[in-house]
Image 1 (tube, rainbow, N blue to C red):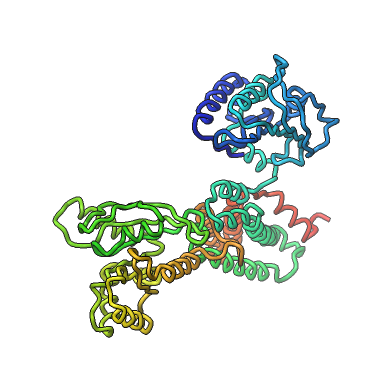
Image 2 (cartoon, rainbow, N blue to C red):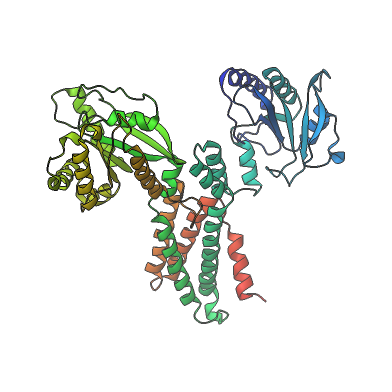
Length: 509
């Protein structure tokens, strides 16, 4: 699987593994990976720890079991932890006492015979076991992700499940964990597999109609059924693509940009959300000249928070570049926190909505994306502690009754007044952008999936275009659509089409 090791342990074990790779290079195939090899790796890490897990997979796993643990695989209970002495097979020196588990193929993660050594997590113990494994014939260190690659080739995982596994390892928030677990469990793969099976049936029927319709072996109306099935599938794929990129956004993080005029309190807001002094706060206008980024967890959802330079006209070339970058980030943002100094609001409550509309019009992008940009924004009226209680109440009343404004809230980064209401509004916006990873149909999580699905839709449109002009070209459209889906999961083959033809039509009987 994937390994993550840090610090001095990483440097020293890396040196050991590199040396072992050099010694075992004779076991490698010219293509880079050889299925006949038995591979091993440290599957746990992050410095010194109580328990480290060393995983072995391949045809020589039984040899490894007997050489290091003195156990015969035919007499070892599968998937059962057993306390054993772990020895160096050459010197017979005791390396450690730990738990050993035997996983005979195909009932293992990789589908091959596998062994796991659960040993103490000291550097010397790990190094000794890795060196002992590297001394055995036909055994070499694993490449990055090679255990998972073997699981894929053995049919244990499809590509979407492999990607889900990678996302689970990298998950930093609860929502990311939930989405990754759902994908790893095969929800997304099953959706694409269902579409593939339906396309296989459609393609088989079209191919059979082309080859055998003149022999009257094909029932009437079969092409009409294909037309209906292709149209329905195309609609489903297009709806799947119109998910607002929720899954991709949840996987990589919501891009939240703090923007506004100078000295509005943008950096103060960043520090409040980070709960640390991530940005310099100064009464001097134009302190922030570049984009300051930090990752935060908002109610279990990942957010990439960006503080930007204050928007104003300036002769300073450096600050002008900062303003340009700020506007660029606002255009790319999933959500914009439009920060305004509440002291600058009109004294008359009736003028507040128009003032804010003009402010947002200058801040947010215009043109075709204007409506979407306004919908994905949150208006933050900072420094509310400088308002009188009467004026603050009038402003809040004006905000409550205003039309056309995005969600708005009064806030004081200095005193924390209004922070709960702001956080509630922010959490609501972030959850809307990401959706619930556990409800509804599984979401797209990779740009790769989106590209292949768009190709699938284009290919299905080709079927409709050529349906009455050239049935062979129409069939090719279905075939291309099936190939596009197969590239997502890694599963597609001509044998499946033949199976459907012979099963549904009994041709050659």
